[in-house]
Length: 123
Figure 1 (tube, rainbow, N blue to C red):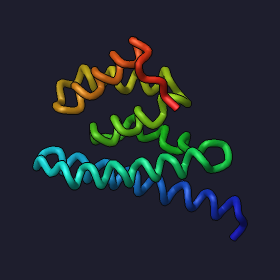
Figure 2 (figure 1 turned 180 degrees about the vertical axis):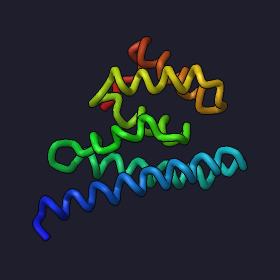
Figure 3 (figure 1 turned 30 degrees about the vertical axis):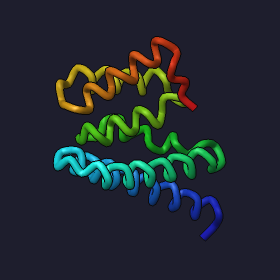
Figure 4 (figure 1 turned 60 degrees about the vertical axis):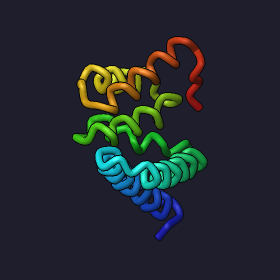
């Protein structure tokens, strides 16, 4: 296996883990398991960081997840892609805000407000 194939396999593995974590976060939110959510959030942050550090900033591999069926996965993806694809990510946040699905709609609304105020600068 070449290093490019290995990198592609690693990127796909990380994307799969990202989805699994997002789904687990969704479940943790609705049973109000804050400790579990926090652990999952830290794992997701490590995945984002690893994707970002890969050649070409491989967070772009998350782009298809902006249309994932799970609102938590979409929210996490939008946050992850704001620096790379600001318009697409913002559109996803606006869609989540308008969905009425709580608490994700509130989180999306807060992210949009902070972007507009300039108090949130995606990296």
